[in-house]
Image (cartoon, rainbow, N blue to C red; front, side, top):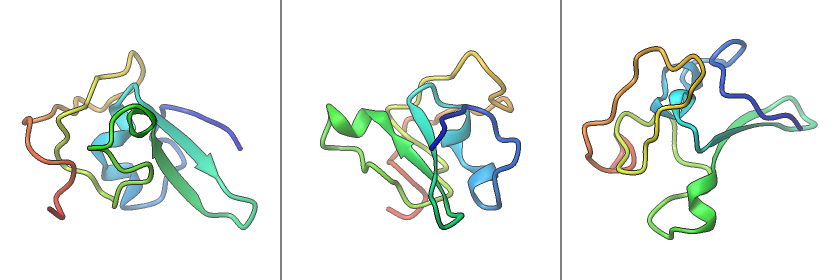
Length: 83
């Protein structure tokens, strides 16, 4: 497994997710070739899913990372576009 905040190499729809630009996101590559975005906020706050449905289009816990965020911002709405 490896963690990265970069959208490079992420498949669609993960590359379109707000999570990509969030400082609380951890990329998880499985042994079977799957790619998942893990929310580190889920460990301390029950409002967040450890592995949210993708793509996430709004999140109250979003914190812009210092890396390549693609200009993503949060509108302060729910956790994902699937609420």
